[in-house]
Image 1 (cartoon, rainbow, N blue to C red):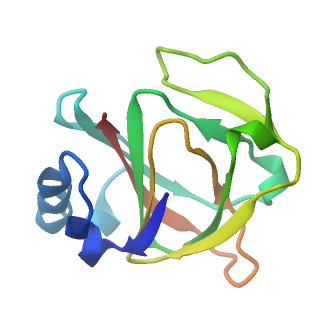
Image 2: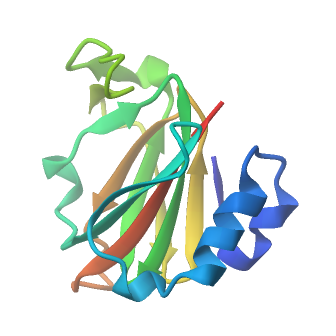
Length: 150
């Protein structure tokens, strides 16, 4: 897991970083419509989301096996939580089509606040609970989630 400013993304050794940065600089990210867009086929795509974060207990932890997430907050702020897999209880079986499995928390987790202009990077099998309400900010969030095939 990594939390940093999007301007520092190039510091990290992750496939497709140049394509992600090119996408961000060539778009007006604030005006992108919600939905999914392929950048390099299924090797790299992005999900554009506008939403109001919910209290953490209303969200589940999740993991992926094929894709890393680069969750870039364009505007707003949200709480994201991370936990060790051994501290979680599976709620669903792994869905290979959606590359997704949900988990219930045992209460052992770490919090991080991700603000506008920052990103959180989650590698496959790193449990995370995004889109949670941050008490210092109660407005809408615009986020781009880049899915990078690892």
